[in-house]
Amino acid sequence: MIKALAFNSSPRMGKGNTAVILTPFLEGMKEAGAEVELLYTKKLKVNPCQGCFNCWLQTPGKCFQKDDMQMLLPKIREADLLVLATPLYVDGMCAPMKNLLDRMIPLAQPFIELRDGHYRHVVREGHKYAKVVLVSNCGFWEMDNFDSLLVHVKAACKNMGKEFAGALLRPHGAVLGGMVEMGVPLDDILEAAKEAGRQLVRDGNMSSETLATVSRELMPSETYLHTLNELFQQMLDALKK
Ligand SMILES: Cc1cc2nc3c(=O)[nH]c(=O)nc-3n(C[C@H](O)[C@H](O)[C@H](O)COP(=O)(O)O)c2cc1C
Image (cartoon, rainbow, N blue to C red; front, side):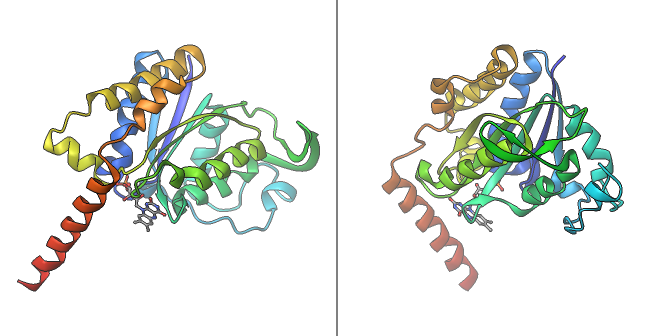
């Protein structure tokens, strides 16, 4: 059975916009037979990497810090699929997700090898060649807001000896949770997220048509701009009353 481990680093956890896409995606994975575990970084105690390299040179494979990473590293090592779900913060993943990735360096060895034409650290034994899926939501309208995050996650996958399997990206997604609450019809988007989960587990990849539906336009850019600016103005006006 395929083991999937998902991390959601939104501080808004299950109530955030990132979760609106992540939830059906994970459901689809379960439907297709995967064993899925979801963890919120906000509930985890993961201290920042101290950069001491003890995990390479003093206690190989083990970090000296006594926190939730002790429980997480074996799970990460054994996962066939890693789902990294993060809201876009300042054009990248939010800090708890980056913190988590930094703390994965005990999974590598200090030795350097030539892998796919590039020098990389050797992956420690017993570590599965996992696939990585990115799920992200951003506030601005355009799809290109995800460009820098995509470059980063793809590079991190190569760095860590993992396979980047694709991304579920939701631009102008700051209104997504609100639209679901208001009953705006978004069934095609939610169903596409679920279908992407099924495809990933069943076929090992996700179709570009399905991923395009997850990212489809919610409203014209001018309407989005106008709606958000009006809303912000109303909220600020309400402070004066
Ligand atoms: C600190 C911070 C930085 C953000 N930076 C960006 C950004 O660079 N680009 C963008 O499009 N949205 C940005 N956003 C908006 C979030 O990506 C957006 O609100 C998203 O829907 C939050 O997802 P969540 O509800 O799952 O936390 C930022 C939000 C915060 C709080």
